[in-house]
Length: 115
Image 1 (cartoon, helix red, strand yellow):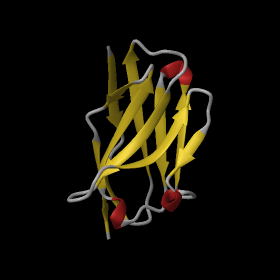
Image 2 (cartoon, rainbow, N blue to C red):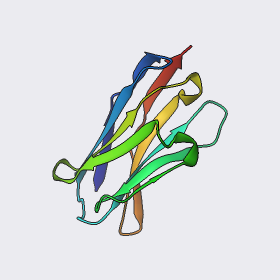
Image 3 (cartoon, rainbow, N blue to C red):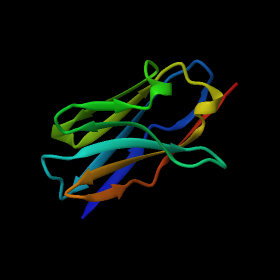
Image 4 (cartoon, one colour):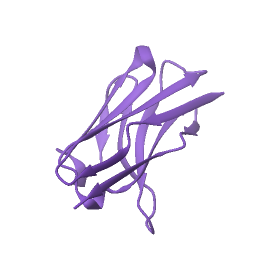
């Protein structure tokens, strides 16, 4: 079994920064992909960014340049550095881990950006 725990969310003013963390524990295989998703009120969940255990990254085009995903394989932890935050970035941010065709999800962390 795999457990994902996110942290780092909170309230920030527009233009500010936050760094989210997601720590995975349990049966983690050396090859996997971890990603960050977000869901704003009344909207569908969308992919923000993902990163493989080899370090290959993928971003939604609209967030390139402001958000950066990274990971520490030794700690089974993925990070999301969010800069120049905007009110429209307000959402619940969740991480997932995709390995051996099974996807695991964390509980999510709230990010609120005030104008």
